[in-house]
Length: 329
Ligand code: ADP
Ligand code: NA
Image 1 (cartoon, rainbow, N blue to C red):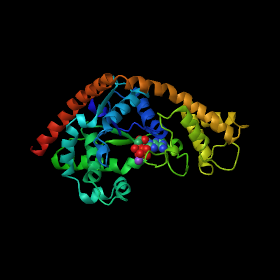
Image 2 (cartoon, rainbow, N blue to C red; image 1 turned 120 degrees about the vertical axis):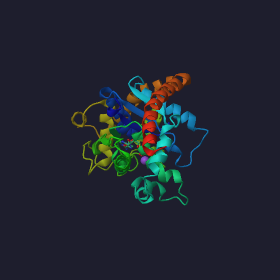
Image 3 (cartoon, rainbow, N blue to C red; image 1 turned 180 degrees about the horizontal axis):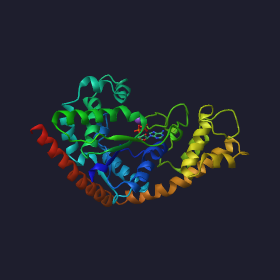
Image 4 (spheres, protein in one colour; image 1 turned 30 degrees about the horizontal axis):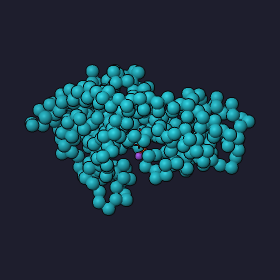
């Protein structure tokens, strides 16, 4: 039943980095095991809130689809679809927009951050949290796996659900955040370990992408910023650089930080970087192979997205019918 629905969203970028893979994709892969109604949406409409390239977007959507499948998302367990193929999202977004206030949206940290350096702020950037609320409420989702930076946006979704229920009658369950990954597993920039690894960092050497070549991976890890102590010890506060490498190593090898630290007592950070690079490469290579195989079968990828869109449309149109009835539309 939809009461169990978990909604996750992923932007259609072909450039998934290890942070996204650890903090989001691998968590969804775990969630799909115990969750019968998981909905995973490739949020192409959100990707238009800042200037985008219509020529590359279609391929990015396919790449994102291939990447999710290559990382272990199972389309028979998860409703995987492209947001813009399901019309109820934008329709419900309008309905929710009419009960949102400008003051509320202006205060959201994601908006402040993304609009700070813009001379002209697109309306889409301002109202995207309302679309995000619609993405969630269209499925009456009860759980939303997100990073901590999304907390206030999900609070807006909760408020909109409550306001709608109060004004127009009980309709939406109040969705809860599931926080995926701890501060521990939040990967840091390889160039500046006081910052998180992010696709918005202008320096591509700050992150490892799932489609980086073995040579690039080796170079990036070799050049990663550590400190002047040569031992390998885990201390995220005092030694964020080397600790980040240990977190990466732990993630790709499936071994604990303790196990790794026990093994590398006599290894210096320079040599350790080579071990980490090797572990990352051997984890990422089979995924890259699967992505390549899937990308050579666009028909299959299109079929997966079409099947997902049909299921998502069926559920969300039911919600939309109910919403319209309650609104007197
Ligand atoms: P980015 O900073 O690369 O733009 P987003 O903010 O779009 O990433 O986040 C997409 C998903 O990836 C979220 O679920 C977020 O929690 C996760 N994520 C992003 N960066 C990291 C990171 N460095 N470590 C762990 N998880 C991350
Ligand atoms: Na971001």
